[in-house]
Length: 236
Image 1 (cartoon, rainbow, N blue to C red):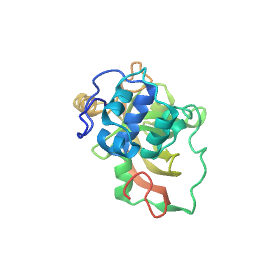
Image 2: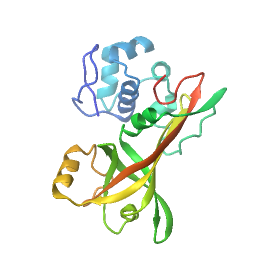
Image 3: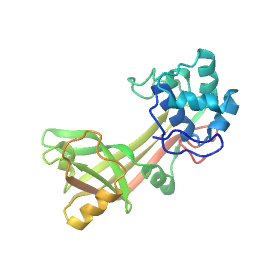
Image 4: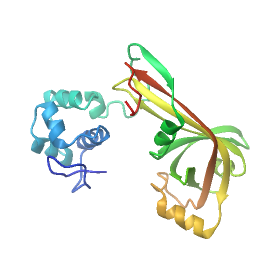
């Protein structure tokens, strides 16, 4: 996470704890590539006050400030307050005149390489399964780590599908990228060390997950919902 910064500088590491509203403010601002000064100007408030909101867990902005901040950050008050945190994505209304567009190979790779959480589709002893995994893209391959004798581990030696997506409720846009390829276990000690050094994140589920799996893409494709000619998720 990021936090304290000067009013005209880019994001820097956090200086202290942050409340949920402050965390969401900072996260959305950074997603849009806005500085505190730019965001405060849009919302008609002071950069120092925005810094206070982002860095103090007890800060409680009034509804008027929240409305202006939500408008400045192209989102909703409910989203800033976490009102939809337990709701499935895609409950918002469809945009006027949306278009579904194919993503180029370059666009697919760019979205895939943002890392995070993806969904692995694999055949298991109990039947087809789709499971979320924390992944990283290294040398154009998808890598993740898991435990033996788990559904993700059954990907090893098989052709699997891997999907990532993003839904922007505020702008009624979204995209998805689907990869198909062969999965194999990484057992070479030097290769494992290199993956450990370059992995974007440890598995959120925790535990001792020492089995590294690498998916070499055989095919890749994606689609995005565009609104008024703007590419979903970037590249406008």
